Length: 235
Ligand SMILES: [Ca+2]
Ligand SMILES: [Ca+2]
Ligand SMILES: [Ca+2]
Image (cartoon, rainbow, N blue to C red; front, top):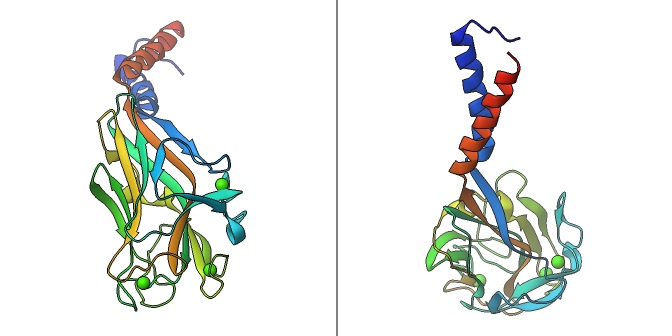
């Protein structure tokens, strides 16, 4: 319904259109890197990285984001997997998403030998650190709803120990990290005084995605303008 002579109503409708468009136009999430590791190692990745089969994790995950084919395994003690991206578009935040396979006998922060830490570091700053109680200890990562995709069970690698999987796209600490530089260095690394690595404790990642949030003030004005034009036509 359009009431031509009621200026208050018109203002309300116009404001409603503006808000509706602005909610989608304020910022745009753009993926700047993705790999599923099924075609080997992308050149953006250096440091500790071996390409291995996903073994018993195959098919586990959420719709459209499941372990498949190969993953990147890191079995080092304090040896980072490094992702370096350059020439990023102008942005205000960065988001990191991956499937995480926690392999074998992690001992949390209070088991033996402990502590064992899993870390994600962005440009030298630790943005996420957690621990897993798979062999000993009792402090385990508490994922948001949807985050646990593979409860602890032996899924490969060292058959003496269980393995668990998480969809880290649900982890708030890895989403919308304030960032504006045109380059970024992401390090994924396990360490701690009790972290043994190798065939004892290691991790894998699959479906690694990095995206940036791009502000779009120009689009906001443009879309709001279109809304006003559309309303005028109805008079
Ligand atoms: Ca894969
Ligand atoms: Ca295992
Ligand atoms: Ca340990």
